[in-house]
Image 1 (spheres, one colour):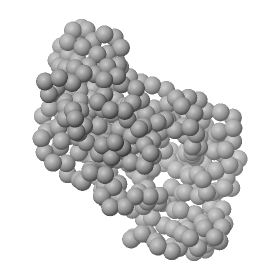
Image 2 (cartoon, helix red, strand yellow; image 1 turned 90 degrees about the vertical axis):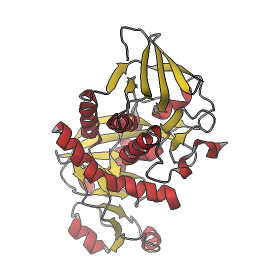
Image 3 (tube, rainbow, N blue to C red; image 1 turned 120 degrees about the vertical axis):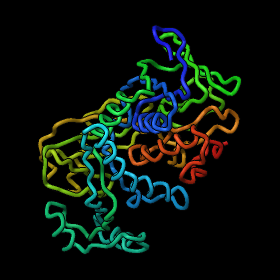
Length: 364
């Protein structure tokens, strides 16, 4: 690698420094590869805006290998944050108390009680009230004992610390604007007119992935805005889904409430209407949240694909290009395991999980 605006070269170029890009960078470097991570901070990035939910059984819209990947991704977290704590001294808060999915009326209760996934159990209204007295009185709830949440902001901080102290990683504050593939490698040009070269490239720019010039195909990834807020409340201990929203309690006395679903392009602003809608989502789950003091409000841009699944794996026409983007609602959940699979592929191994459902060519 060289600096001072001269050519920069590495074994792998990682474009994007959200959770997926950070996890991929660390996995690659730990496999002995020299990594150049290009970090361009953009307003509305999904990783810092997320609530950090690890809930693959709550909204299980997939089956087969894709569902298996999501479950394995959730189960990767205890060992992953323990390893980060050992190498960085940063303790990433992990809530594994389980997740509740409320039935807000009798019709929803009837629907949720039938066909429960393995390991998920039904709680009658009195059982829900004993577990979480501050919840609205409901028709019952499903309880997902293995699901939970991670503090995504602390996770990002721990990954950045590990990467910053890794001898095989160089971090460049810039933005890749154009790429070209030749001779089995990749050449990239940045906003600051640097030239970057690598044998392989990982595309991990979230909602901005399709904007990169020179990609071998159009990518079906679009930004979908989610507005959220945090309030001062210790009313709940469990992550709770209900109606159109969810609440995620933090150990520091904050409770996160979210989130809207808005197709407004790359507009990361939060609005009065959005804050009111999010407040109503929280109040529908717990009346205690209706008047809780608001601490902050923000919005993030989810990188959505048409089927809600990520783009992960090599491009079939340009094998030097590895996709790790479009994780939709599950970027935090899938980041560590995505990084593992990216590291496997770049090092010449088979990925440890079946990622066939995530191949880019499924969209033609």
